[in-house]
Image 1 (cartoon, one colour):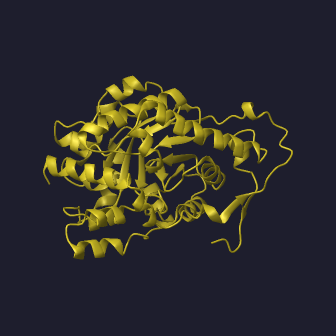
Image 2 (cartoon, rainbow, N blue to C red; image 1 turned 60 degrees about the vertical axis):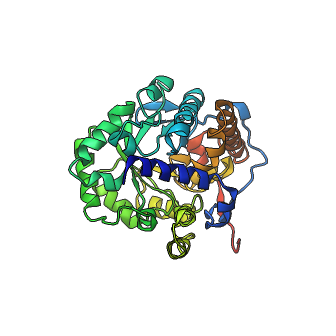
Image 3 (cartoon, rainbow, N blue to C red; image 1 turned 120 degrees about the horizontal axis):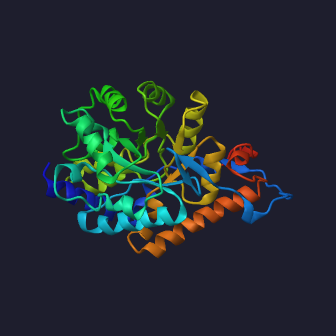
Length: 347
């Protein structure tokens, strides 16, 4: 696939995800099945609640990851700048979008060391697709992706469903696990593996842990349906029909989080996939996530201005703080022990 075709594909993805009509083509996250027990006597100072945590040796002011986003070359420069500046201002982590095109061409989409200059203190995560690791350049790509933005870690994203439905997608996934294992052994930086919206199962999580992966992003169903996105992009009615049949495919975010945490009690986990507000973030943290990631929900603000992105994440942080307050949780450790009840029969 040529550089221009890849750029057009990314532009298409951005336009489609920003289209509100896509919201009907997705399953639910599963967080609606959980409800916190309200604490009417929190005995806390709301403003003193500590949301701080750390990732890869860097301090964070809140347990939020601005998850991987991308777009066409022109828009992505501003998007990445706004996101990096926001992460620095609010003390959040940031994962960049796929660096494949930046590695294979002169179109860097703002994915340069300037990001580290804009955000010198945050955990910054590079990003490559798993399929890019299997070729002869795989380990070199991984190293260059990290060096390109002076990242603290590398995200390797798994998107087999999207690739299967995408024109020109990577259809041969043999050897992916071995390639990930090679990279974790040679990179010299932590490797994070994430799905892109269909969820990680406990079985796959164990395989990745055994391959040396440092952290997992379960990235469950309930957010952007990349099957539906590819269905919207389909060039024929036949391809659209194939893709749209999978628009609700995947493991809901809350289910994936619970199952992976149960199977792997000590594995560092990121929960993402349809988390739209600070209450869902609090539920994810209580169910076992170490960080919560958000991408599509922040995309509109990211295409608008730095101030819009700041306001978006300030709202999420304040919602999370109030959720801690109303569960009697003085910090994130206490939030893990808050009473979170499964709501029987909730649709």
